[in-house]
Image (tube, rainbow, N blue to C red):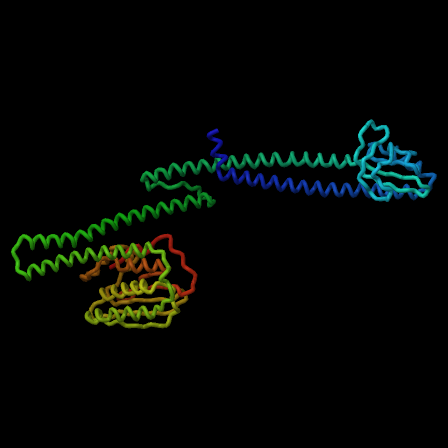
Length: 472
């Protein structure tokens, strides 16, 4: 019993049972229709026969009518027909009816009546279809036929229904039980494997049969999910180590500086310099923590309350004006080439933050006397922003990593940063459904942000976070 219940509860068995029920209902309806059509056809055939026979006998000469009635009865070897001749008072003259059926009208039309035959051994009347006609001399002619053939037909159809449906239902249920048992084997094996995964064995995977069916596709999806889980756990482990390292260094430096200051005797100026150095280390730690919190806020955000029409050209111009003093102090020129773009649908403040991080990144890595260019244009893929510099550039081999957290490419220049700027840009782009890419500017690099115009259908978020980190 314990082995049967899982089979009966399986989806395959329930599907087979539903199909068997639908098949049975269809067959019943089909046989009912066939029975109805056959009954109607057979009834019409019998009615036409008895009407034609009564019309034929009534049209015969009076002296031959009696002989025709007796011949009609004598020729019925199966005793299914009735023929009788009655006088004006309804007394039988000839035929195989004991008396005139009381409900039979002499109108020449077929009627369903109760009739009792002569010398057939029956004491109860039987159901017949009969036609009565009054002859020219006043006599009554009755021609009829019993409906036993219709009853036989009903029994035949019922028997055929039972013989046809019952085996089909049993076969469907058997196939459902077999499919349920077969599916149950796979599900139980999956349960054992997923139990190992729950216990921490992330290297196991669900088996597939490479036949492309829906079960295989489900197993492949689960395996892909496990691969992603392993990848994300690995990245989380690496990010945790990196955060601990990046926070430990400035905090340790600040503590050492304060410790040296505490032990020695210094002037007021020395104390102020020591405090400034310690505060710089603490500010760096606070900056890392703030950036991580901001990144978590953006990545976990699903709100669209602040979304609305945004002009990409205006954002690029505002960011350029904001960074122009810092660029001039370094001897860098910010060049604008802003072509008209259709309006975007997004969060103005977040997009300003994204473009600002791109420009800040370009200004940091552009040498004195260099140029940072902001370009906007309308492309078939949507409005596009390009932030280019003529700095050292990024080799193609590491471009896939520039959006990872705390990733910093060593260019040989001592450039400050915590490695979260481009990660914030990537998170904002993902929230909006925008595409982000790094290309070669020759010299330098160019970051391309391809946006979606206002009113365009929403772009589904990618299954994998391609921008899980940052360069600076």
